[in-house]
Image (tube, rainbow, N blue to C red; front, side):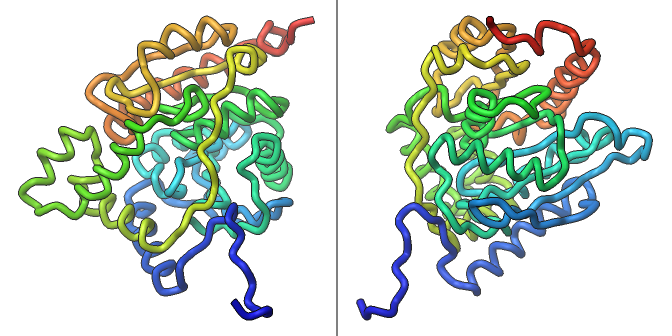
Length: 316
């Protein structure tokens, strides 16, 4: 390699080239058009790069003062994945969807942030730049690990946390990676086979043309460069005092749902946990009406609590 050629860091995500990046953005925009209208887009600066943020709702200006929702997407995707959820969540409160640096999206990644303390600092800096003092934080998959990590390390801005089939509860096992690769290959299967493969793999991407195009474009365009997150211990989870809601798919291959249904409420004081039937890793995509209603009900319950309740009190 010539001396002047910059080396690509092994812990920094990157696009393969501008042409594939632009094709991916076009596939993203198809999904954004299926969700709530985007009210605005903005870029905020953090120590780890520029974070691109989508702002939604609410329809009623009087609801602007309500505690907003912040959405953190899963690995290998971007905020476009929230299109089944943005309309319901933003109907009566502000919603912000962040493109995580290091994943394909419109953020610009400059410094590694896969380490737990760095990931938490990135999110806090993004909240600072957006002027968000208190938020309902929602994360899916790898984004689920990010929101659990935030609740453990820097919870001061959090009104609540909702983790959707999240990382961070168990070590990412071989069965999950097999499912990921099988799902990816199935997107290229003949059309007549896709409905059966989608049902067998519990993978809606396969039978939805727009989702399939988005996933395929992202895989071609972007190279993720970070290790899988390590799970939090019982002691680390037990430190969480933010109101916590865990939603898992019955056929999840990222976690063992029955195991976590017992464990999480036992180790996190006051936590809720439930399993959604007829889905695997994407309950908010497979059953958006159900999951949206339950998330909103949880947030309403939290917002109705008086500020002096024990949810704001840590152990002495």
